[in-house]
Every structure is written in C-alpha cells, then in structure tokens.
Length: 485
Image (cartoon, rainbow, N blue to C red):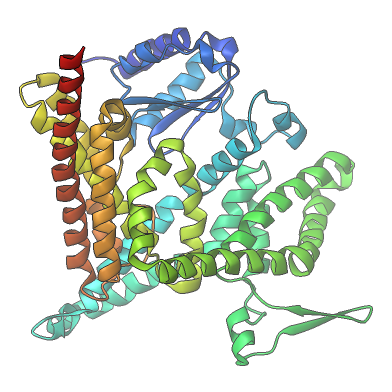
C-alpha cells in the first residue's frame, strides 16, 4: 500500500517543478474540489505536465491563479500536505494578517480576493446549511401526504416525535443563518470568530422586532433618540449581505483595537469597543444599505425570472457551467442564501443541477464515441461519477473543455433541462448540493421530487444526444477540410 504522505509529497515536488518553483507561488488554498495556487507569473506553468499527474483531473488558469482539480474530500488532504511540505503560504492562515499585508500581494486582483473570500466564508458554514436542507427534505418526506392521501407520520404515529425533532434540527440553522455568516466572515477576514458571534447576537436580538413585522405593522420599531435623530431599530434576520459586510467590519475594528490599545486594558476594552462601534455602524449605516442591496439582488433575480421567463431560464441553464469554468460560480452562495432567507426557496439550485447533468450527458457521449479506448472510459467513468454527486470540474477540465464538442452539447442539454425547471416551477429549500444528492433539498411543491429527477434526466439525455450530433458535424467538418487540402 502506497503511503499517502509519500504520494502527496511526490505530487508536491512535481507541482513545484511545473509552476517554476516555490518563488513563483504567492499562496495556496483549496475550495470544494480545487487546489488553488496564486502565482506571480503564470507563463512559467507547465500545464501539460500538470495534466498528466495522477491526482489531477484537470487544470485551469484564471488570471494569476492556477487551479488543479483534484476532487472533493481528497483535495483537503492534498492541500494540507502540499502547504506543509512546500512551505508556501496558507491563504487561510494568512487572513490573520493585517489588510495592508494582504494588499501587498503581487498580481492579485480585487475580484480574485473577493471571490476567494466568498468561497471561504460559505465553505466554512456549508456543512451546516447542507445538514439543515437535507433534514428539511427528510421532514417533508415524513409529513407529506403520499400514502393513500396520508403522510407517513399519520400512518405510523410513533414517528411524530422524530418528525418534531427533525423539524427543530433543520429550522434553527436557517433561522440563525446570518449569525453563522457573520461568524464565518469575521474569521475569514482575520478577526476573532467569537466577536463575529457576538455581533450576530446583536443582529438577531430577540428584543428587537423583525423588519417584516415592522413593515406589515404587526410590530413597531424600537426608536433610538440620538440628539433629536430618531433612529429606527429592528433585527436583521435573513440579511445575508448585511452579515457579510459586518463580518469584515468586525474583523477590522477588532484588530485595530487589539493593535493600538495598551496590553493592560486591551483584554477588557478591545471587545467592548469593537461591539459598541460595530453596533452603531450596523444600525446607522450597514443595516439600511445592506438591506437595500439585498432587496436589489433578490428583486432583480425575481424580475429576471418573471420577465424573461422560460428564455431566461434556458440561457442561465445553458451558460451556468461556463461560469463554473471561471470560478465565478462561488459568488452564487451569497445570492442563494439571500433567496432562501427572504423568499423561502431557491430557484437557482435546480438550474445548477440540470446544467451539471447536461455536461454529464456530454461525458456519456464522449465515452460512447471512444468506447474502444480504455483510458477514455476510465476518465469518463470517474468524471461522470463526480457529476452524479454534484461535482463537474473533473468532467469540465478533464474532457469537455479539452474536446469542446461535449461542452457544447452539454450546454444545450442544460438549457433544455432548464426549460423543464421553469415549466414545472421547480425550486429548492436549501443550496450547496446538486445532482443525485440534490433531490434531498428539492422543494416538494408541484411534485418537486419527481420533477427534479425528470429535469435532471432531460438535461443529461439532451446533452448526450446533442453532443453526438455536434460530434458528427465536427468530424464531418474536419474530414471535408482534410479532403480539400
């Protein structure tokens, strides 16, 4: 049996040689599937050698960042050993430095930083969100009328108590989602996570009425009279964007006071002043602005889905996996969280899934066309298995982008699957997983579970058929050109 450490160390050596040495690396970290290395000069990268490494399923370069697709679970182990073995800066640990230190990094754009930060924030809390979503799905299964117009709980009364506990286990996480976000954001930006939790408690204070109750007249806002200025106070439940901004602010203020207050009084005054100043900033500035941004984001998405209808869904389903290639898909976590918090459902998640399965159809077509090639079948099976469980990067970078025709067919498959999503009003009650596991978080409304399976099957079969047609055209085109030459 091969020793994992030796295997990962050998892999690290090969990567270092292929990126131009340690001096060319600024920092490294990972997301759900990719080892990401920010580089000073991407021209030094030997992409062909990297693609040939055993642990690498695909390679992508986005601006100054090298992305090695390794796969879920395994990427955690590989990245940890890679950072320890090479001594390259761990970006997660580096977030504990001051902002001025981070700003000195070479060739790292603000957009790359922003996307990396969003990825880090939601990767931290994603297990909790997934747990809540799947528990909601389980409770829906127990309480929905599916057996002779009766629910499972009605048929087996002994399950009623289990259903109640499952319900509490799921609803509590989403009810306090902004608190989780501000905690994770504070940690991400180098602050003390407990200060994020403390600020989250202020945001979610039970002593304050919710904005929705104030808006409907069910409650009155608490009025703070500041030298004649009447400031309305309410809680910020469901405000993900507010939580993200406050996490950044808490980290900066907390670090400032820790750095500038004398050691004797720092322990007591730093946290007190952090919460005091942050509370004023929350209620006077960030709260109103953040809620306006949240409303703009959700209202714009809802407007687009209603205005452009099936065409808008098809366009999004067709191009979503192209967004994955760039890494910009990590930005959608905040948007989906906001949709769940304000609307109760997420219409983007099923679109992500059918787009994913469309690429899966492209992989199946590639395997069929290369059915006599053992290596093609091996890569294809591995990639398709990953797609079934919600991970498309191995397929995208290992096959579809490389040969193009599976990517094109897969995009059309995603668009056709998206049309079915629109027609059946399919939504999700959580986010963070697609493919087969995604059925657990599909909304049961409008026969959601059945339609989820059908939508994904349509995306996959359409992707398969269209990829075969595109491949036939491409081969005919190349044959015609060869004859002319």
